[in-house]
Amino acid sequence: MHAESAVMLLVCVLLTIYLFYALLRPEKF
Image 1 (cartoon, rainbow, N blue to C red):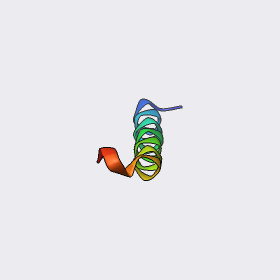
Image 2: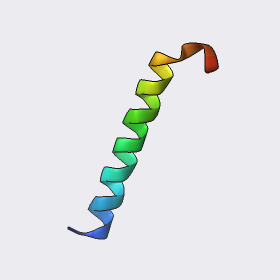
Image 3: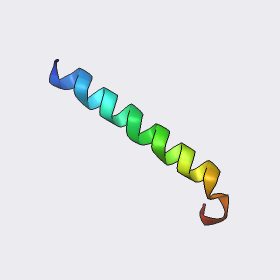
Image 4: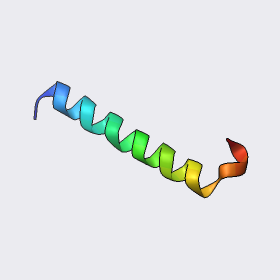
């Protein structure tokens, strides 16, 4: 796996987790 694709995948996963957490805890955002 190329480093660029790995970084992009990691960023996508982190953004998905952050958005999911924001939906679960709307009072903190």
